Length: 225
Image (cartoon, rainbow, N blue to C red; front, top):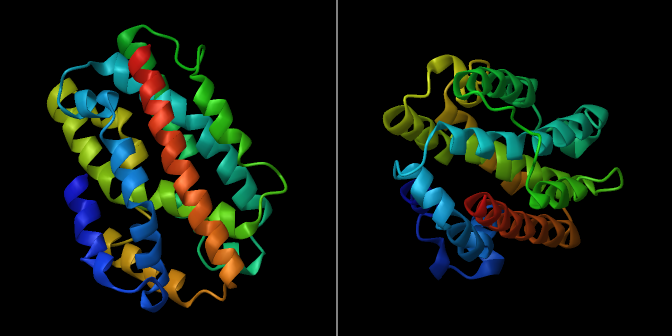
């Protein structure tokens, strides 16, 4: 995952913040919190093959309510200009997550989602009905571009280490988007050209930083389970 992030950053740290494209400002501002989240013990051990299918199931179940709430808000705001310019129903993950969780739960004999981490509720609470569109877009960016980048590495590793079957990995399939790299490049260009005020850009970045911090807390809590 780290290599993917480094490739996207492309050495933007040496450019003045005010002259950077917006997507590079986001990457520079969130670098420390992003790295901290992906280096939690739970994630390192999960990706390193030291855990099991049950651990991956807990990971997926802890994220599912976040996607459920986020996608409900995105559908409600589908006609708003900022949301409309980025959202795509081919990105929706929640139904796929439910399918994967059901398959894995049957395989390991564990009912998922019964005892969710407390951090999941804290994360979902940020997706309240009054959230500003630019902050909702930060959720959209963090979750979906993450799934299209580092998420693909996660899929490969859980297959290799834990023999998770393809029918339990539909979360990582995006058949309606076409070429993923092309989609991500277009997404970043839309971010750079989005008609956002300076306050909205600060709101987006602030939300993204908070989300990475929450992700770190979530992974830490999963590691303590």
